[in-house]
Length: 277
Image (cartoon, rainbow, N blue to C red; front, side, top):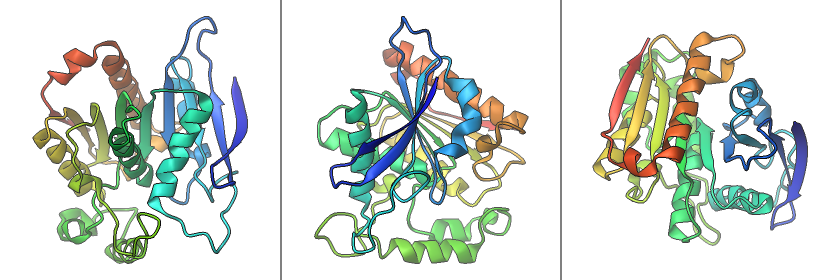
């Protein structure tokens, strides 16, 4: 059953979310939280529902100002802490002590930052993180120097530079001046759960995926990095028309099942990079 619902965040804003639950009703299904990219909505994940909702209670959040969620008033400063808090409050509203988190693009950034915040506050952490074409490094220099800066079919170097300037104006915490944007690749990653990352070998955010996988490995966190040839940024969102997208979703499902069933065994696995045509 799919339900379109709302809850009220602690600052009074109404946030929308969907639950897709086609699991056996006599079993307590684990929760899979899907976080969409900037300027997107939870509907972007609609093609994923048939592939996931039989095994998990799928929750799709419309970030504030997106989809059916209320737009914050103009005088209310949007902070990254507020976005992270929205995710935490949704899980608390649902009574979910632990979930697997999936994020694409900027949603991948939010998946990592939400987990890091949960670890810092000692309120538990997700069982696993799956990121698709994640944004993990706010410094554009590495990406602008990469060969994909002229090859990516989604982002141009000019658009990336403009986005980086915008991030320089984002406030990280209430009462903190601008320029405080934190990149997941620069954080202490040693307490994160297992991670899987899927990215295109031709996209502009490939360096972010590769660097995050490297930093996770250095921190002792096992990460499977899947690189897909001939695909575009966020290609798994096209699961209704793209066979490779459906394969990526299956891999993500297998990852979630594995870390749920054997967390200790997973922690002993070596990090690996998988090139997928």
